[in-house]
Image (cartoon, rainbow, N blue to C red; front, side, top):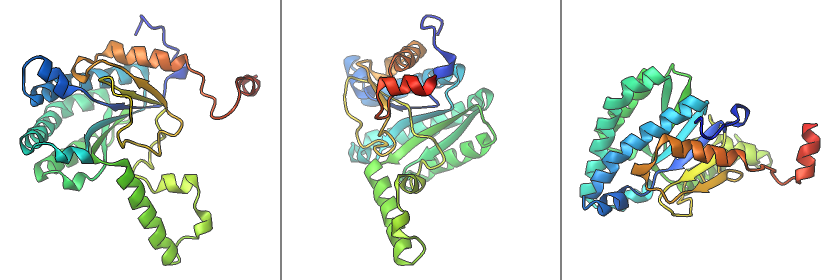
Length: 249
C-alpha cells in the first residue's frame, strides 16, 4: 500500500470482483481445474485483507454464476466441497477481521451442506461491521432483474403498487443488492473484457478495471494498484469536468 500513496479520502465504498482464470492457471501447471480453484482461495484472502486495510466497506465476489451449473458434474461437486471447506476454515478469521458475510443469488439451489455452512457463517458474523463480504453464488443478473420485474408486476396487478411510482430507485430496491450501495469499482482478472451477467443494473456508473493476471496470482499489491488506478479517474456521471470543479468549490 505504501508504494501507491493512496488517498484515504477517495477509497471506493464498494468493490466488486469477477474472479476469473482459475482453470487456465491450473492448466498451465499441468493440473486439474480444481487445483486452480483451491489456490484461488488464497487470493480471496489477499483481496479481503487489502480491502479491510484501506477501508473498503463492501466487497462482492462473483464466486459461482448460474451458468456455472453447466460445467462438468465432477468440477461442480469439487467446487461445492471447496466452498464448504473454505467457509469452515475461514469463519474464525472473518470474525477476527470484523467481516460480515452475506450472499446474493439463488443460494437455495446449492447443496444442503453449502447452505448449512453459509447460514452458520452468516449467523456467526452478523454483528461484525468492519466490512461486508458478499458472495454471489448461483447468481445471474438477468434473473435478478427478471424476478424484480415479476414482483413489481404482481404488486401492480394486485393494486399494491402504482405503476407510475416505478423509477430507478424503486427498481434498485427490488434487487438482491438493495441493502448495499452500487459498486464504484469492478475488477476482472484473466484478461477477459466483459461483465458476464454480473450486477448489470448496479454497474451502470461503475469504473471497470480489467487485468490479465489469473485469479490465483492476484495479491494485495494488485488490489492496491487497481485502487490507485481508480483514484486517478474522474467520475463525472454525465457532467463536464468544469461542472465538477465548480461543485467542489
